[in-house]
Image (cartoon, rainbow, N blue to C red; front, side):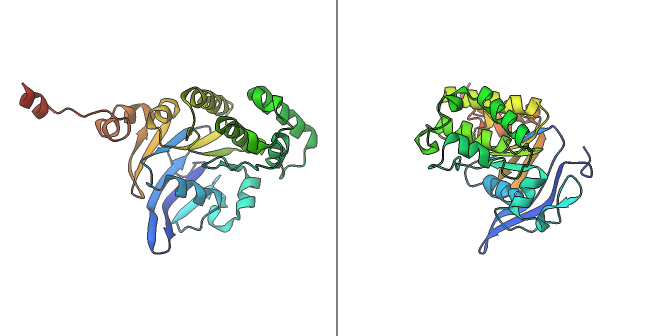
Length: 253
C-alpha cells in the first residue's frame, strides 16, 4: 500500500520523556476503512504513540499527516478532534461525576447538528442497552466494562473518521471483552478507520486487517494480521505458545 494515500501516515515518529526516548523513530500507515492493530508488551511505547497522534504528547517526526493535508504536528488536540480523530484512552477516562448521558453529549461538543446528535445518541443506546438503562446514573458508579462501553460511545459521538482505541480489553472479564470487541468489529464494518493498541495480541490479530509489532519503542514486525498470527516469533512472544525447533525434538527423542 502507498504511504501517499494513507489516511494516517507517520514517518520517523519520536517521543521522549526527558532524556528517555519512549518511541524511537517509528513509521506506520493506516488506510481508509482499515482496522490496524499495534501490539506489544507492556512498556513497548504503544500508548505513547497513540497519545502523540491524538495531540496529548509532543513529538518529532519526518512526517505525520492525516488525510494527506493535515500536519498533526501543527494541530492542537481539539483541532484533531474537529478534523475527525477520536481517542478512547487507556483506563477509559470517563467523567465520573457526570451522568452517562452528559458524558455522551461531551463527545459531540464540537458538533452543531443538534438533530443528528440526538439520532447518534439513540444509536449508542441501541448498541449499548445497559447505558440506556442507566442514562441518568453517574458514570463513576458503572462497572469497568460499562465504563469502557461509555468511553467508546463518547468517542463515536464525535463521528470520527479515525478512531484510536487504547487497550479496550484491559481489566475486563472475558465475556465483557467479547462484547467490546463485537462492537469494535461493528464500528469497523461501518467504514470507520481504527488504529487499535492492544496487549491481548490474540484477540487483536483476529479482527485486524494489518498489524505492527512494537518492542522497546521500535517497530519490529509488520504485515497482514493473519500472517503475523502464524509467525513463530509472534506466537512465542505474544500468544504464549512455545516455539519447538527440530533440535529440541531430536534432543528429546
